[in-house]
Amino acid sequence: MKSNQNSKPKKGGHESTIANKIIELVTKSCELVHNKQKEPFAIIHTNGVRKIYSINSKSFVDLVASEYYAETKSALSDASLKTAISTLSGKAHFEGQEVDIHLRVAKTEAGYWLDLCNDRWEVVLITESGWTVMSGEQVPLFCRSNSMQTIPTPVSEGNLESLWKIVNIPSRDRLIVLSWLLECLRADTPHVVLEIVGEQGSAKSTTQQFLKQLIDPNAANLRAAPKNVEDVWVGARNCHVVSFENLSYLSQQYQDALCVLATGGALATRTLFTNLDETIVQLCRPVVLNGISVVITAQDLLDRCIHLELPRVVSRLLSKDVAEDFEKHHAKIVGALLDQFVLALRQLATVEIPDEDKPRMVDFAYLGEAVFIANGHEPGEFLRRYKEMRQTGVHRTIEAFPIGIALFSFLQSSPDGWSGQLLELLSLLNQKKPPGELNWPRSAKSMGDALRRLSPALRTIGFECSSNQKTGGNIVWKIRPL
Image (tube, rainbow, N blue to C red; front, side):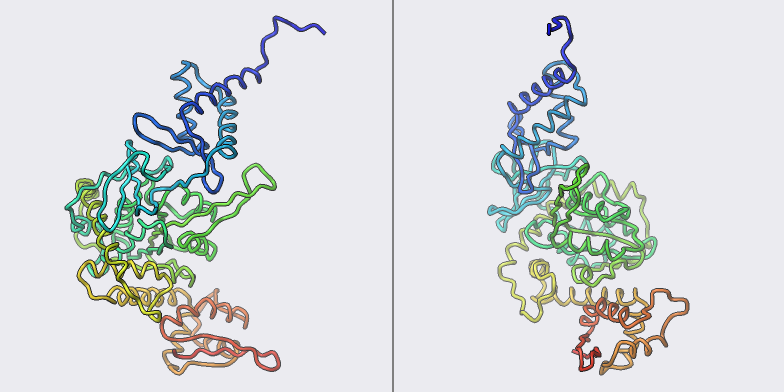
């Protein structure tokens, strides 16, 4: 068969040639690597600055298209770009070195790190000796999402008074909130969930926004309730501090997801456009949320959160004036926050907490004690305030369940507790059932489920709840004072 010498090259071959040129251009100027989850990244060195991009991110795709045009003065087709990105991703996965890649915060042997996300790719190193702004080869690798924004370069010799004038946090709760902020800077511990509640007009969202601005500013600092649990994890992949506002209800499924996210865990889901491949998302993120009423009711999440109730704002300022005031002092507030972290790290090694006083979130308790001691309080003061805050949160949570209110009322009139079968207890509590209540237990099983959910809260207010199976298969429950 004769070949047609005048035939044009097939489009596929042309696209393949261009894709090869893109790959050659990228591999000449980039180092292809992957993280522990085998996700592909490209490290770029330009003008003394080291940058890192996720190969599958829009930022990297746009960068490649821009560099190709600068080199060839030709635009790229979607097909060529897609082929090149796919190949680069594979090379990073199978040929690239495995490295640690961080988002906003990191912990290494040198100390704690905070990515400022500026154009100079500067980060802050914080140790008990002090903090310093650094860049270059000696700092950890930080990747950024498109929505992450810059923290101003911190300025020393500031104080937090400028912050407390802007956010509506009662003075007695400020060191607790400061402890939570500093916990957000630690990448090697579980995180505590901050729940902010208050009536309309208590500046919940404004307060939450400025707190997030200090640690992890984002194009969307305050987000509405996610549509599904996967959205929680997707959002958390693209920011460090997960922030939701104006929540009125969180299902058990959402609360379980936030619990896992705050203390560290993984979501496994089917990889897009495949039948058998699985994508694992493994994260540990600080969480802050707000609402008019309490939305955290699941006991596992309750054990991992602090509740902050804001008073109503009496004297209001223009939003524009508040934003300008924060912007004016932002760099000094960040510097003061880092100064507080340094002081806390100096105290941390000396903190002692008896075993019987250690709460569920013991890492946070040690840091909180260090923060309080560094600010002139006696040892144990943080634990006292933390316990008091948790008990207040527990009472709010019990009040969120009608059956919980009835049980709490019953135990107040029966301080020696109760023992018997669940249907007997349900019969006693039915007398306190609100008219028209739909979520009321109707069987021994549902009453048992309710007691299991309420058991940690009951323990916090001084009652132990347990069950034992007796001869004949009958199960006897006991609620006894500790």
